[in-house]
Image (cartoon, rainbow, N blue to C red):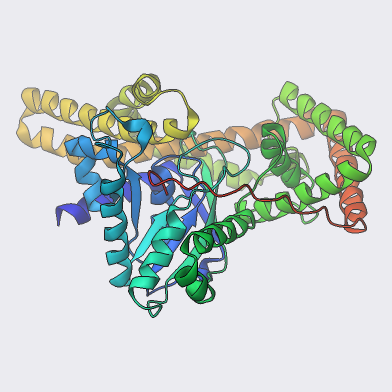
Length: 465
């Protein structure tokens, strides 16, 4: 019961942090049988949790052993049936490996095989560490070794399926942002039976390369950070069907644009450099004018009735929102300052830190407020305050989001009405940029595909998967 409550609470927090979680290829998620999900790893502990918000079944995952040294964190790990993996870099730390860590990891791998024999699901991260690189890191062989050894122990009758999943965050450290899961086609291990029996090491290497190829097909990657952040935005600005694009559509279009960019840049670098410069200038103009999305200038004006309706909702909800702000705003803001010193400023851990520290501080704030009110007005008032605090906090959160949408709608209406020439110039520049992008994509379709990059050699390392 305690584990179920912990799982519910944590996954609810994840959905609160990322309220817009989309999935492409959900039909590839196996509802039963032994499964190994292999994922990229951009966002620490939030990565396996994000998968669990969309999975129809429980999923165990591997996490670094140092997490299990803290009794509270260990309780949360146990609630998700997480297993420790011992990394050499953690030697000497609480929960780190003793000796060379081989025995401990083999015990963990044995538990993984036992879970697969029980027709359960595992989530593994073959890169071995969380990171913010723009491309996949060289994969480690742990996932392949677990999968092949599990099948070998069952005389190749287990039917393990490997499912690649690409994770893409709109802004992984930003509260109330969006995330996407791209699920690739599952594959089985029958073809590796003979080679694993004869030459297990070569079979592990071959399977690791195949896992890398399957991840390449679902993970959005680019040559540098500017491309990885800029191409999805450009994809949204120049969409032929107009807004609003779902995150799924934005990701798919960004994938096509990246492919076109690489082909045209190789064949006609001057053209691509000119297009990139045009996009940068347009982005600078929008930032200067305080415009987030140029499409909003082309949308039909918001109906007065809708604006009035939103204003009335804000007015009626204001007392509840004020109560939520009084109870929750200070601890919520403090989490942004306290999280970096605790987990570090690296963005792969900051999202997890904000989620954990923010939830803890807000809960403490509610408890202190309930105690204070109970002291002055009686225990029933204190209890009512604590029970109402989550509802009031959510009211404050939604009130702020509706107010922001209303303010933006009014701002864009003002620009279209009182600065029509500026709006028309921005619309013309967006349309010209879209035409250039469409022409570049069409030119890329006529070019031969670039040779696929050779995958780096898998890393054989027992301390990570």
